[in-house]
Image 1 (cartoon, rainbow, N blue to C red):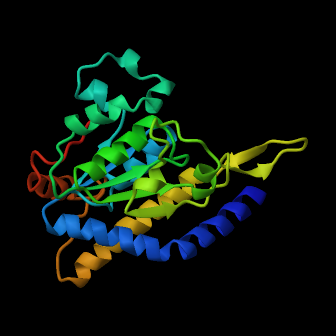
Image 2 (image 1 turned 90 degrees about the vertical axis):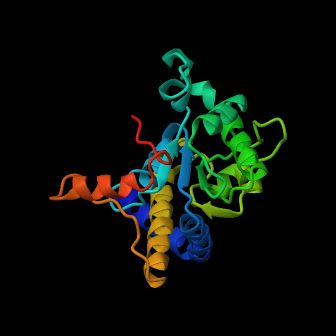
Image 3 (image 1 turned 180 degrees about the horizontal axis):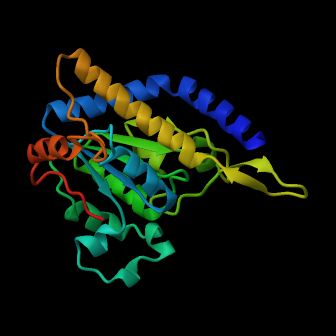
Amino acid sequence: MSYVNEVLELARRVADSQAEQVRRAAALLVAALKAGGVVNAFGSGHSEAIAMEIAGRAGGLVPSNRLSPRDLVLYGGRPPSVLTPELERDPAIAHEIYALAPVAPQDVFVLISSSGVNGAVVELAGLVKERGHPLVALTSVAHSTRMTSRHPSGAKLMDLADVVLDNGAPYGDAILDLPGGGSYGAVSTITSALLAQMMVTEAVDELVALGETPPVYLSVNVTGGDEHNKALESRYQGRIRRGA
């Protein structure tokens, strides 16, 4: 139970400390949606799970896309062999990922990386800002601060974002100490998912307060879910994709 207790305590600290940042991030999402934009979420490695929380998720926003290094294969015709663990360190793939996505000027981006230092995510952050998109970064400030950037510019994800959401994960991610050194019990996925859902639900609440009907997915495993979702997705034809 020690892991559960540590995670619950950390989740509460993150929720409380990041409340204002979540509101700022949600406001960027709402502005983009009201302008006809979509939410583009990118993560690689374990951070891809958080992009999946934001895009194409039951209870989440229909106008959303999940971007990942796998897009090079799914949409770019690259061979599967390109998908190595080191790929996320290559700044060049950011330009391919952006070019392959159905991006419009009014879109907002949410980039997820707990370390925030790998070449692909930092390059994509710079490209996003260069193209004029609002950018939300979901990262671990404690971990990123102790790291040296792997991007040629020396920048980190948190340096480039309009809003930074700090998942509160410690350096190295794990929170339980091992006898003799080392640690175990990773937390960044849990707290990052919490922040992602806080941001999306805050955006939905704001849309409701404005008198709008938020474009939210139903589960496909409830009666009428498929029909509801397909009707909403048709509004964003050519703007969203639901690849593997």
